[in-house]
Amino acid sequence: MQNSLKVLILSGSIRRPSYTFSVADAIKYSLQEQGCSCLHWNLTKQPLPIADPAYHSRPHDNPNDNAKKLAREADSSDIIILATPIYHNSYSGVLKNALDLLTMSQFQYKAIGLVSHGGNRSTQGVDQLRIVVRGLLGYAITTQVCTMKSDYGSVDNDGIYPISDPTIHERINRFVRELILLAPVYRALRQRIGLLPSEFK
Image (cartoon, rainbow, N blue to C red; front, top):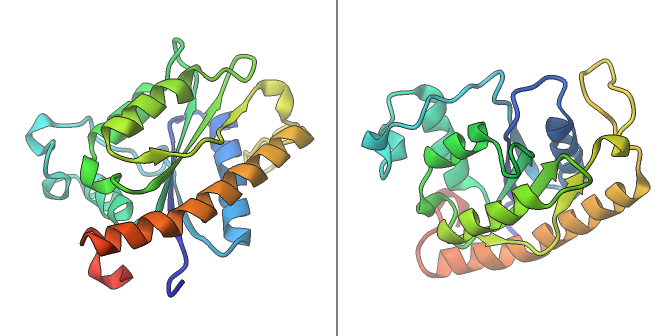
């Protein structure tokens, strides 16, 4: 490929330290090892405004700089990863708000990865996110990563919980392989039907 795959990672947790942020960070490094360019959006350092319905269909007109930047990053990404803690048997409100700041045009014909943390590796959050991704015209990959507290070691000096369970490392590797396999196919499709930004053609 002429250009490396670009990845946007959205972690739906503002807790620090955060297990959700930590597993998403591990996925980021795994993707980078495969040559991908990754942005892990930090909702603590780059908070997003409450979604305003006035900009529902035109996110680039949002007066908030972070909201506009998120839309630009999503536009140019080949892969989007959504990571969430389990809140009330579902995904988090801050992730829902971030998604509400975007539109179908940022997701259609893209490989989407789903990640969650909570319970006994509960799939409740990712199961519901699959429905959301389908509504946004994205393609959620088959492999998903779901973790629980015992999958991690003690928090390090950078505020990251290292993953200690080898089965989660194996799952991340499979997750990354699937994303890298499918993303170029969807990029070629977007280019063929005129959805790819000119700088990435």
